[in-house]
Image (cartoon, rainbow, N blue to C red; front, top):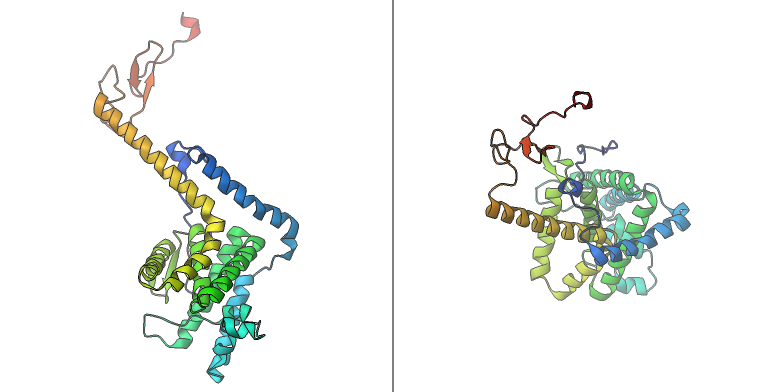
Length: 307
């Protein structure tokens, strides 16, 4: 799948996820009742899309990105402008309900590199537009809208019970992890210089969150669990399926290795004596006489007219 609507310094082709059918494992063969549970848990999304699909907001993430750029420009003239947008549960309870949405419009301008804030804001907007294009192309407008809505609900719950320090950051991270599920092998040109695959950036972000999860206080941990519930809701079935498939494949490989250790080889040509260990490209067939031959020495079938 090619992501054609690339923006800025980001371009590439998605590699997708590897198919388990090559290993001889069916889609649900190893998952059993647990896979059925996740399959049933996803049906409500299909039903919701059939009933409320007309309510989908096209270009939602792209719109959020543009509003982030606009709010950054306003903050240049009014340094305290971001304070009017941030998610503050106490102020929301006092009637400032717009904060339940406007925190999404605060751009992430923090960077480990010494770049000016305006440049970080530009790259953040470009990155958000790029992610929005990819997610909407892979998911459709309704599922992306629903994913953002469920994520916002998790952020709101976490903010009221555990604090809202990381509201916008977590929203962006959840979107990025979802993007990495669809386009793991796509490359990103960081600041138009460094080429990095999406999956490695996602793993690095996950490691950073896990490190903080280990050493931060309980409020941060509860916030992470509440916010990333939307990710598990939408991708839990895939994660569970991949876990069981990997487990099944590992068991089959172990069984195969044990068979080789006991019997030595599984195939041997009656003519030349070659086995599967002689070459990875060798193919073996059983002929009509009941003997096994390699492809080179396999006897040809006798025409019926010669009998």
